[in-house]
Amino acid sequence: MRDHVTPRRVVILGGGFAGLFAARALRKSPVAVTVVDRRAHHLFQPLLYQCASGILSEGQIAQPLRAVLRRHHNVRCVLAEATDVDAGARLVHARRPEGGDVVLPYDDLIVAVGMRQSYFGHDEFAAHAPGMKTLDDALAVRRRIYRAFEMAETAADDRERQQWLTFALVGGGPTGVELAGQIREIAGHTLDREPDASSSNPTSPSPAIRRSASRATR
Image 1 (spheres, one colour):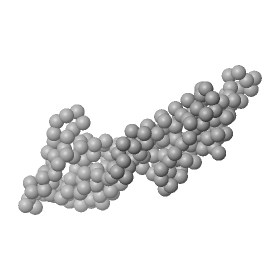
Image 2 (tube, rainbow, N blue to C red):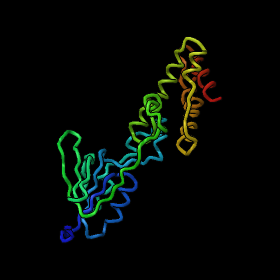
Image 3 (tube, helix red, strand yellow):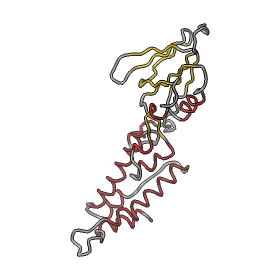
């Protein structure tokens, strides 16, 4: 036991909502807080779907932890991924992004590392169906959505076009419902305003885009 150490050292693993609120709750406490996160930014996950649909940029839903906690003078942030906890010695072992290990002693440990995407025992689905937990996930979904519409634009026939315009979302919670609505918005409004270079009306959408939008919103 090292309770004689002053101030007490609190290590928080994870910079998500739980880790962030834990650090804020200790703002006026006589403790030294270390927040360990492998990405060093706080992500507002409820808005990931807007990043995936291109409405918001990454910087609008993710802020550096150092900036979020800049007024918390008893908090420091460490960019590293926790790899092991030695409860007996009260040590956290972590690995830095560019290599090398760091050891963090603690008196109190808060584990707030969040969760991983579940494929219900079918991890092979991950290569074809990205989840929606991180910025990388949202950007991967964004690329797939817009690529599908671009491929539909130059499809050889209606059958190929219909294949590209078929979107399947697993999960009918807030994220799934909102993302489905945003895909419809992209098809029915954003892409429908794409100009047709062959038309005398510069605001007229190309025939393929019109067909794509019509089919995608049914």
